[in-house]
Length: 532
Image (cartoon, rainbow, N blue to C red):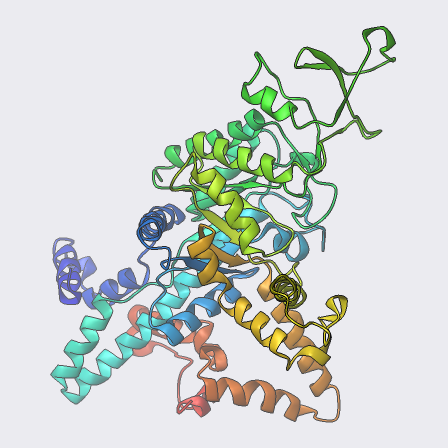
């Protein structure tokens, strides 16, 4: 519907309500409706799920059409990210939000900073989803509000051509509301707990939920030691629970991301139930580290299984956990991924110990032998030392080619001494093209960085503190922050506008007319940035 059509619709509605509605302005009502395109989180989830499904299909047709996101731990951070993307690239297409359980644990728990072990309040997850979308909807309202003001000015000047251009811009406004991939950890309990939390997350706006195959009450960060996985059937019950949650909430296009931690997890809490040789439970148990046992020498409390007609004792730790055979991680990952997709997951996540395209692609190729369109969400993790990893990858490649490496020490490649060398330059180029290359060669549909804004907040705060509390004083803020905001066109330099002051003034005018006491008058100091 056109902008004028929306106004006419409200004018008709008001006209049927009688004299008591005469004070309602149809154009003001239309503007408020346009500024609030997504009244509920479910509206958001349905809209963004369709976007994500279309993006997945586009990637299947062309791996160059991969998608990206950055992890955001506050609504303002997510808002500024999307405003920046629209400013620099003119569209939000292919750019999502990522909600990291690690950052919720570290930054949003009422207990204070916690490790990524699912100890934070589960309700903090849907709360952050709702907060992110509140800020993104406010970004829409702000941007549209500025267009409305420009429209009013064009009309005042009698510039009909400009007024029509602005109306067209309003009608074709691209929302800041984009898909969010939200981390539900290991489900925070049994399948019923997973289902209940999933409903809350979907209701808050999440169209994609990422769940991992660790034991819920033993959950560890994917880049820490001590990870414990569960048998496949336990994990598949939670995948099904999430699907039922999506269907119950009316989000049929909802996306499930199944994450396996098997590459770094050498332990399991339980032996899988098996009915017959070769079934899924038996295949899981086949990875257990076992020793053959003589039937006459069974010890007290021994747990035994049979394998190929032999009596076997799985290696059990004092923690009552069972150990997998070393070197089986990749095989377990491949089996995890195939069975997760067969059980209703849409996308995969393989948590790796390093960003190596060959390793990732090797596993994906094996998965695609069974599931041809299998594709990954991949964590471009800050837990990786990207500089050292890629310099060592180049070093190893050069060594294989027989090149002279006498100028380099492999264990010292992180040193600034190597920054200007050919090896470092090639490594940086591989880092630059990693997402494009791995999308093409390793089946990665979505690239994300889990914790980037955690690190950028720390770095920028350190730089400001060093300057402001040092010799530069106020210049440390003005030169490094405000002046750069102005010159780079950072929207929040006008922080009153960004916080909604102009939107509030518009509402005051709608509600009170000429009696409105507005904040944006000539004495508002934000007017000093009018030319910014």
